[in-house]
Image 1 (cartoon, rainbow, N blue to C red):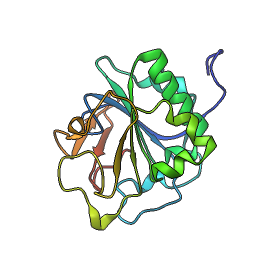
Image 2: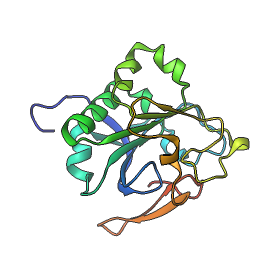
Image 3: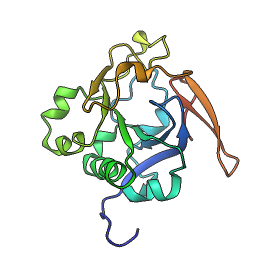
Length: 193
């Protein structure tokens, strides 16, 4: 970790440097490790374990993975709000240092997050929050960027509207510089490794 930066660390599952199916435009996608919900049919069950996978300083996500032409960062999981201080630091750096938009997916309801003081500080750096747990019987069948129809969009800034969240597809395959093939998007078959 570089000096002058927060000692807060993120337990990270994976980072995809550039995706077009995880929110508006070309986005870096950070998958936090750890989720206690274990929703049936979750597209990313490998993120459920609370064990440490890989620790990142928030600025390290950008130093290691940010690519030219990326307009924002999407944070998913696991459950990002299980690491609220680290999430807040990541989003603050995204906005202040890189002028990136921020989108966060959470299994919590927005009102519940607003009632949790440790989570409120992170919310101030969120442009769009997509809330509520995935429900397999309510799967989103359109190209709208959410897993199930019970999930709500909260536009916490004027940067985007719901029209911006219709994606060109539900899933994509990403081939990394190291040759690693990763799937991402809203399909149970597409899980970041």
